[in-house]
Image 1 (cartoon, rainbow, N blue to C red):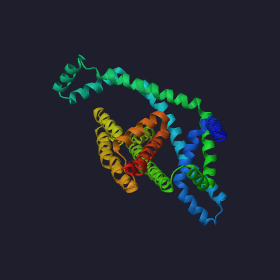
Image 2 (cartoon, rainbow, N blue to C red):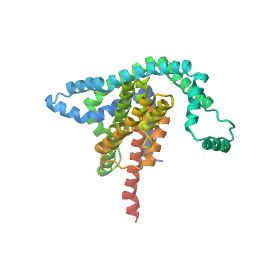
Image 3 (cartoon, rainbow, N blue to C red):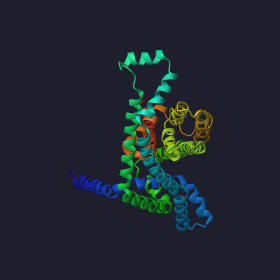
Image 4 (cartoon, rainbow, N blue to C red):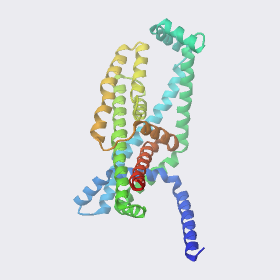
Length: 354
């Protein structure tokens, strides 16, 4: 082994070790930095226009963009999450106090009356369950969901200090991403050992999918959640914020979406005797809430991003399970980078071999 080879092994060994140490240092704030980078990247064109308007005063423009981003994006999210935590606790208390077996049984019996007897008998026979005890099934499910909600509220209260610190780090990082974003982008691009065309292809696809996910998927889901929450509030349905947030989560799914929320709630209202509220909710859910998805997504995304629906669905679900809410963005980004590498392989190696 030559002296040059020894130096290379030593250098890269120390370099990899330093990368590991650096990762351990920023690990507690990795998702704060991630969301700061995402917000900065999405709003960076606005920042550049503002910088030109302010005669290239980058520092002042970065500070103003950080303040505006915090007020317009972050503060409303914090307010919604705080209200959500309160409603989750109230929902837990309400479900525990009001859903008694005697009260629920009359509603279940009414529901059974709407189902043909032959269907009930077939279900009991096929699954060998004897007399179908729907009230027990529902109470068990409600109890499980209630305990989960309560545990999440308790966990959030315990980690309040950590959440506040992460929030401060995110705001602080946004300023530097706005100020030094262009330089950081060029440095990162320079370090990637690929041709300029390959790097441009990957970064262009990355930016397209980021815009599509943020504006096309998340923004559409947020609008659907907001509309559902307003409908709940207007109809006097309890826990409007909770309903809106749950609608937002389900609207991220490419199949079913918001219907998983407004449809069962509408059916519940009909079964419980509130026919007007149930009918109005089902009509508005089908005509207004669900139509938002069909109108906004094509307008925002257009034909810029074409991803296989199955793999997009799996990437979102898998990433959310692995990384939490950040997985909504991480999953599609990893998928599109992976597909870009496949395209590069086909172009540079496979076709070259042929």
